[in-house]
Image (cartoon, rainbow, N blue to C red; front, top):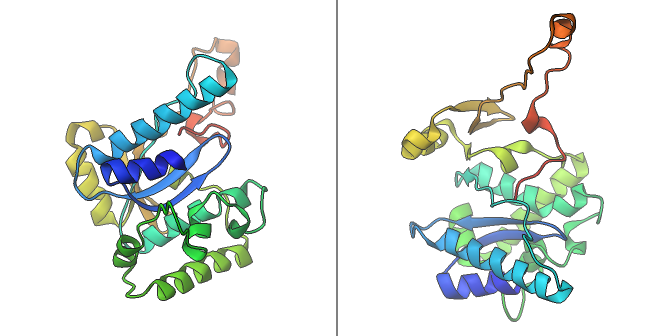
Length: 232
């Protein structure tokens, strides 16, 4: 969290929500057009966190499993859905019953503002969610989280962790067009009321001998469906 604050101060990273856990972080940030702000900020956060951990533990080598995964989210209803999904990360993990019980997340900061080292850009968040006052934002945010908690509808959703873009059809298609050749092989699909841009799921099929060929359909395995594999 120290390096999140440093990234905001040093590069102007616009943080809308966050969740810091024991082995990964979720960040919801606004892209205001400065091309290097997000990658430089994440390089700072990831690099310094890894360095400090290695120094404390007297170890060498990589700290993070992989590079970060970025998903573009449209600034409409999908924004608050993504925000609530992040808030409920530790509820989903069974660590707490309510996001207020986790001290290292944006929900706590929004509803119990920090006197120093605030991370969230409240003005930008109000602008994106079309609220004129912080009280209205807090009320709407709280009601959105409470609704999901009542319905117990906080299961893991791969659209937020594996998609390249999530939102309206026009937004997702625009992202695909901007990616140009880099979006080759990636498809726009709809699921759960949202359009997504993601890589096509291709089953792994080995070279089976004739006596085992009948097992192919049963043993088809989609690598990206494994809920235990998360790339941060």
